[in-house]
Each structure stands twice: as C-alpha cells, then as structure tokens.
Length: 558
Picture (cartoon, rainbow, N blue to C red):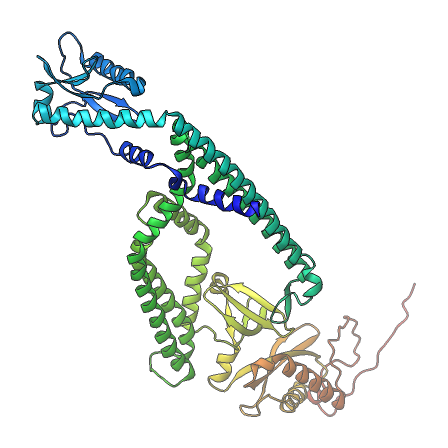
C-alpha cells in the first residue's frame, strides 16, 4: 500500500512542482520574471552601463558622471551597494527615498544604494520623484527575490522535492520495466499461436516468427526511449529546485521542447496554406479524371475526330496528365511549408541539377517516343522488323518499345534507338493495298527448263494456306550464276503475324511439288571437261533431231 501512496505523492511532485511552493515564493518568482525598466526608456541615448542584480536589470547608469565618479565606476558601486544591503537579511532596515543635495537617494539612514539626479530624470523624460520611485520598487523586488532564493527554507524545500523526485523516478522506471516485461511475455511465442503470417495476394510477405522479432525489437526500442525520456525530464526537474541551477535546468529542458514547439507552431501557421494545397489537389484530381474519361471514349471509338487517331488516345492522355500534375505542383509550391527557406531552395536546386544531368537519355527517349507515336510508325500488335529483331509490338511507352519475337522472347528497345533504326511494318503493308509480299528463293541447274521451275513454284504458293490466290503469285529469276539459276517465288498475304508458319508451309509445298515432278532442288557444279559430249542445254532448246556425240578418249603417244 505504501508504494502506491508514495507513487501518487511523487507523481504530484514531479508533474506539479508549483503546487508545493509557498505563496511567498510564487510571488517572488513571478516578480523576478518581470523585465526591469531601465532609467532611460524614452530617449534615444546611449545604452550606458546596466546594473544587474538577482538576474534582473534594476538600473542603467548613463554616461553622466556624478561628482568624481565615472559612469562605469558608478554602476559598479551601485551594484555592490545593493549586494551588501541584500546580504544583511532581516537586520537591514527597509529602503526608502531620501532627499539629498544631488537629488533623491534610495537607501536607509545607514547606507545609500543609489542617487537619482536631475540629469537622470531628464534623460528618462520623467520627474526625479517618479523615476526614483520606479527604481526603488525594482530594487526592492530584486532584493526580495534574492533573499527568498538564498534562504534555508528554499534549499530545504528543494532537497525535499529532490527526494520525492528520486522516488518518483525509481517508481516510474520500476513500473516501466514491469509493463514491458508483461508485453514481452505476451508477444513471445506469438509465432506458435499465429502461424498464418502476413500475406498479400497469396504471397507470404512476413512470416509469423519474423513479425514476432520485429515486434520484440520495437518494444525494446520503445522501452529504451521511455527510460531516456524519464531521465531527460528528471534532470531539469532536479536542477529547477535550486536557484543556482535553475537556469541550467531550463536550458536542458528547452533542448527538447523548443524543436517540438517550433514544429507545432510551424504546422499551425501553415494550416491556411494546407487548404490552398488541398483545393489545388482536388481540382487537379478531377481534371485528370475528366481527361481520362474523354480519352477513353476516343480510344473505344465512341468519340471520333477526323484529325485524331484512336491509337493516339493513351499516349496523349499520359502527356496531358503529366502537364496537369506539373501545373498543380507549380501552383502549390509557394504554399508548401518551408518553400521560401534557403535550405529548401538549395535542396531543390541540387535535385534539379541531378535530374538534369541524369535524365538526358530519358528525355531523348521521351521525345523519340512522342515522335514515334504521332508519326504512327507502328501500333500495338503490329508485326514489325526493327534492325535484327522481328516480332509483334506488345508495349509502346514514352521511354521504351517492347517487341515479342516469334520465339516468345520480349525484347526491350529504348525509343532513341528505335528512332535511329530502320523500321519495317508488315502489318501496315498488309492492311493497305493487296497485302504484304512474302518471298523465298531456290537455285536450280540449267538442265531444268525455267518454265517448269516457275510452274512448280507457283503451284506450291497456291497450295499454301494464308497466301492469296489473287493477286496471283509470280516468280522472278534473280540471277544467272555459273552453275545454276536463282528463282524467287513471291506471294501475297494478309496475315504477316503468321509469317513464320507461312514460310514453313511454303517451303514444305515447294519440296513436295519438285519431288513429284522429279526435279532435284540442288545447285550442280560442273568441271570444264568437254569433248563433244552432251551439253547441259535442255533438249527442248537443242531441237528434236539433236544427237549428242559420244565421249571420246584417246591414248596418247609416249
């Protein structure tokens, strides 16, 4: 039971130290906090030499000598006189105003603390009597505060409060340890009771054991923070119980309170600006929603313009959305807390420089992406050939273009490289006109009539699926080489996306047609050994009565 009572008393002493102070001490402390009124308060005269006592300014000696005393010497003497009077404690007589030849004196019959001259009164813009009365009150307040602060009663009360504070700190640390020990016991073993962990879309992000370790770490850090806060508030509190250390305690306490107070008042100050930022954000948000709706209608074909293609809708929306966001940020920038500070502007300048140097390639890709979009070099799902890459366009952004090859390999190409490469768009050629022409070549020897080769190639093309019968396929003799003739079959198709399958079927049909006709697909090579034997000229060209001469071999004479 006594622990709970002691804890209650200590908490009252720690949280409300002013409640146990006497009425006299409260008055003295309040009076000592009142700033001193200088003798010269309404003149633009030099500051002079201030006289300070009990942490307050009670008098200011102007550059006006009194008798043989210089102003600085006069200030030192006044301060020493007040100190001597205050040290006498209860034995000294009360201060009063005494009329002197030089002016009005402040002191007792036994000692004189300060003399207010007519020149002091003129400098202050007051009468000598009024000025002397004000200075007397200031000195009396400072002396009372000094005597109260240095009394045994004050030190005794400080010691008592210190003892209570120590007991309160001990109790706070004790209950802090017990509370966190109880929390640790509750958290320990959590992974056994809760084996589900943390999942997101069926994927385990954090296991139960890892969550337990994180919670225990947070509890440990929080316990250390509470202990440090107890000590941080305890030390300034102890120092505030004694006059000599009260200023140090206040300074230590301000180290933590001042930043939080500054942040709080800064936030309160910028609350009106938050409304401006909120309004700008709401306008920008709904503007983007409206723009998105309009471009969705264009993309679906529900809203048409003769000069605007539907495949421009998505990239144009991205550009317009970016411009709206940038405009909103520029409009909200002056209302951002700290935007006018030099630190904020310096950080913004550094970030701007970094972005400028680091984004040169990104900007070139964006510009190239915009050009490719509005020149309509290719669209999504088009079959294109870009350099050595042939495939379908699966994604087109402002930065990169992604192509899926016939092997289902996605190739990502920066738009700046796309702009510098030759682009062959098979889909556009197939959609416009008769279609795109697919072609392949064979080399056949001179012994096979060219009419027969062309007929066989055309038949193979006509039997190939997805190759058009009209326009009719045609054959080109692309070269007459030393040993064979190059024949190229050309056929139209409207399905360039199935180019690989079409070529495979065409090659299969060419083999079947040539095999059925007894024509070998080969490129024969001949040696120049001729002795009247049959030439490679087809018989249809040599004539019906042509008889090839026999091959003659004669034995040479040694």
